[in-house]
Image (cartoon, rainbow, N blue to C red; front, side, top):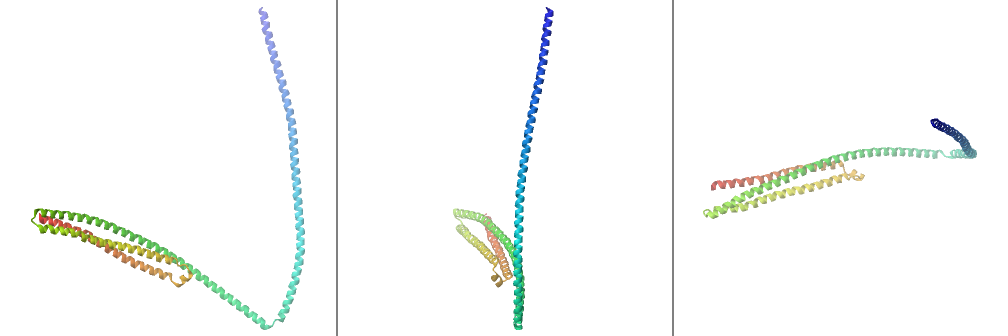
Length: 337
């Protein structure tokens, strides 16, 4: 029984090995057959593709050759036509030259005959006219050259004049700005002086009213109590009148400044607008600029002096009166004490 089992296992092992060998051989045969089939298909496909490529190349070559032949034929025909036209034109030019030569020869003959027939007096007259025309032409050229030089000089003078006007305009603008700053400073100082004067007047008025009420309650000094009240009521009118006068003076200065500024701007604009040759020839720009500058300098000096006087007047009218009123008030308190 054990021998039978051994034989059974041995026979199974041999059968399996034989099966594997047969399977391996079948697979190798199948792979070989498949490879051969694929190689044959590839060879056939490559032959077909090469034939198609060669056919396409042949078609392209034939198309190129046909195109080249057409272009060469067109070029040959054009060259032939050009040569034919050139020959025709040469023939026509030769004929025209012959005709022109004949005409020139005939004209020379006619001119020679006319020169023979012309009198010496006529020739002299013609020469005189030619000389006169040449002299007139030289004079005109000389006049044109002189006019060009004058034009260049006038252009250079005008450029210099424009530069001067621009510099003067900048200078006037700066001076106007400085005058405006001085006016604003004067306004500020006037406002400060007015504020200080109003405070001083309030200080002056309140003690005097207090003195008048004290004197009236005591009943001992009726005249002394009434006199400061009248003085205190009259004092603001005087100060207000003076301040109104100073304000009017400052307002007049401001109005004059604006009016002068507009006048100088108008004069400068009128000078800058002189571009017409007739106007430029009638008036001298340098003289106009010089007169305008002198007018501006004189007005500026006068205006500065008047502005300084106004400032001094404002300072005199603002501070000393308040100091005087304070001294009177303190002096009265000291005398009453």
